[in-house]
Amino acid sequence: MAMVDGAPVQWMELRPALLEAAGGQALQDLALDRRLAIELRKRGLAVDQSAIDRERQLLLESIAADRNTAARLLEELRRRDGLGPVRFDALLVRNASLRMLVADEVRITPETLAQARDLATGPRRQVRLITLPSLTDCDAALRRLDAGESFSDVAVEVSTDRSAARGGLLEPFARADVTYPQALREAVFALAPGQVSSPILLENGYAIAVLVRELPGAGATSGDLERAVRLAQERLLMDQLARRLLRETRITVLDDDLNDSWKRFAAPGNDR
Image 1: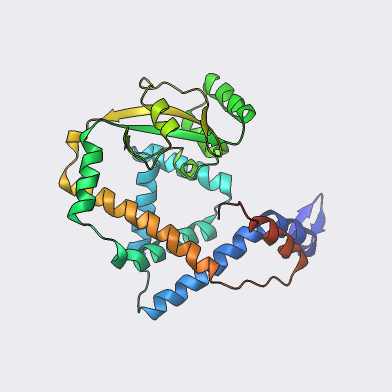
Image 2: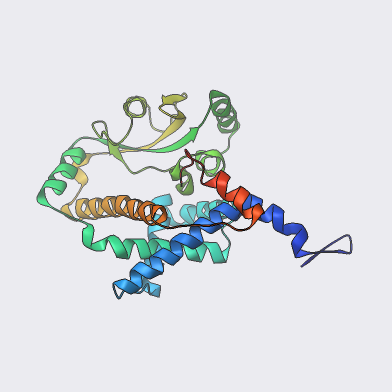
């Protein structure tokens, strides 16, 4: 399997540490993938290469508008999370499966479009975000930013928010968008372009934001609004479906090393 100073490394030497480090996540991914495969078969659906390619494109678009920047940040994310070709390809298939299964539940109604248009009529701001558990962590991140590191690179490395996968980039939002915490909205709409905020107190920690750009609401076309509404609904429904399938799955762990990892990974309070 490997050699250290000419001496062989056996699988059983590495196995406990590998299971402890990533066994819980790998087990959850496998369980979800099996449930998704069952659901697809029930409905006579199959994920093809075009669906996988679309997931990769959507992922890149969600990371950054510039294609080169998005590709670089995606590679950094994959390095950080250990997403090699096997796990990354599985992630794309997983997302494509979830999107396919929730497609019929998306409802683009005049009401949802009107709500989206109302939010888009005023100026919207797009920020990159870093969330951290403590002020000490915020201070460390701010020191790195002051030293010249890019906000997106620091976000990929240390942010606890899901947006870390996109270099901290959030979708543009309006001041009145209640899906974002009030404290965050107030801080963001007080920033100048390129300005980094002080730590913002949130319900479960702190946030640091940098203003990327301000967008006039009048620029949104009906097609843009419909696509944005569809993607937002899909994201919510996909997350709900994944959580439901995992709740309904009975997982029995027979290996002691894997069981320890699974218990820590599946502990209440962990964002799975």
